[in-house]
Length: 84
Image (cartoon, rainbow, N blue to C red):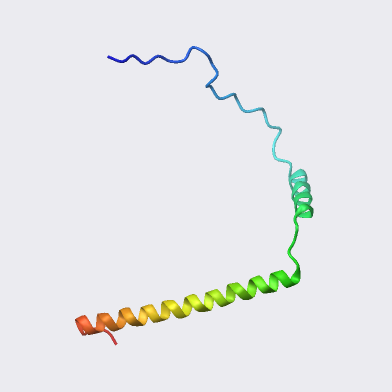
């Protein structure tokens, strides 16, 4: 038979949360502005190139799924004789 004992020390207990004085909206927006200043924004060229790549991939994906949909529809119509 196996006996399970609880640890004697309190090291596994979670300490209580410190008392909060409430939410400070001014400090929050101040912190947001400070973080926004630290961001390294991409250049206009990088943004345009990335946007172009995304649009090309979306177009390729649309064409791919259109073809797959047509093939599946053709198969369903051939097997069951239903559909337009």
